[in-house]
Image 1 (tube, rainbow, N blue to C red):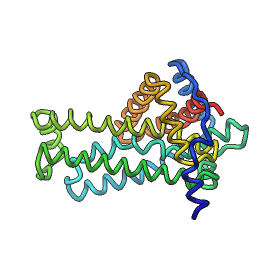
Image 2 (cartoon, helix red, strand yellow; image 1 turned 120 degrees about the vertical axis):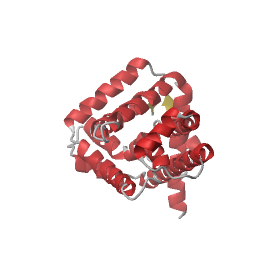
Image 3 (cartoon, one colour; image 1 turned 60 degrees about the vertical axis):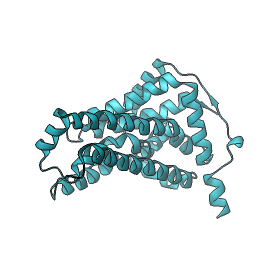
Length: 264
């Protein structure tokens, strides 16, 4: 038990890598390298295996009634909150390719053998808690603006949200609160998951390094967050199909961004 705890909560004063200042060109280069990794590796298969079971469950639930409609958008937008966890396998593929090793989409599962797996799981659990907190907050906001009434149809719900004062309030407040959750996730996970794959430093050290990375590069890391959210939104629109391309590119690019920001 003590070994597990020390592995997950390694003392941060023992691991304190240098943080580089990055520029906008570094963000573009990370995206280009991410696209190169995507072209070289069939990682879209890995992402499809994650996305479509989730999408299928949501659609199946919709077929039984519209009570899920009020949190449908928060569920979908939550991809930005759980994305760093879902992309761990992609970081592993980029790491292997960087080392010149053989790469296949099945190697994404090698992350399960990582020395840092306990720390990765601990950090992943925190991500899921944030995601569930976002869903809870979104439901509260809906009930404060629309009450407990269940939407009768998808077109009717869309009309109420887009054309009424209550709907506008829902959009403004919901997006505002959602952005706070997104910022929190960006701060704690911008480089933490890739760092744990690279070094067995413990979840706490990885999170503190991520906080330092964002603090040292507030403008460009914020821009990175906007890029991630924007591309995920584009990927979600065509019935989630675009995520099969967007998520792998962003996942691979995040690994290369980590390499640019963190220096051991």
